[in-house]
Length: 203
Image 1 (cartoon, rainbow, N blue to C red):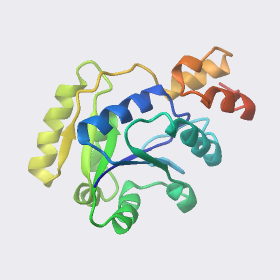
Image 2: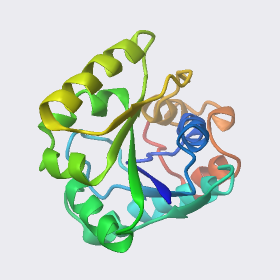
Image 3: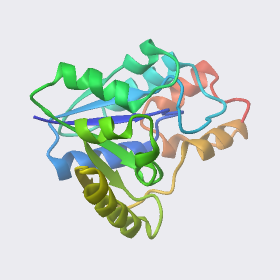
């Protein structure tokens, strides 16, 4: 079985995330998706970071709108606490699904630096690295880096030329802080949850 692993702060999860997931489901023939909100991202600072329970719940609300695959939202990194290292997560998932093929889904910025990650070779050994562009010329950079990772590290890679949606969690948080309407950028049900919980009111 092909399983897609999609981690991130999801602060908040938005339509760009869903768009990428649905495209990868079709391209990789994924039977299951595991969405994993991070506890503390090791590669970047995300401020303000909504409580883990709220980010988890927003992912659960969005999960119902992902097509053609069984979607599981996991709190494994939130329960682990501290910095969320992908190598630890993939070890745990490999133990749970030893006979299945794990596809680690990521964006352009993460893929282009993956060899510098904590225990990067473990990440490459346990999962197929799958990436999509987040810029106009990102696909070509991804293809070149995929060749580098395959040649130098023996990584397995899949690059998807998924049309880029220019939406980011950072901009959404800023819009919410300014009191702007963001419903069109978020999965159905997530705007109401954000309003109810008064998330990102500080901008």
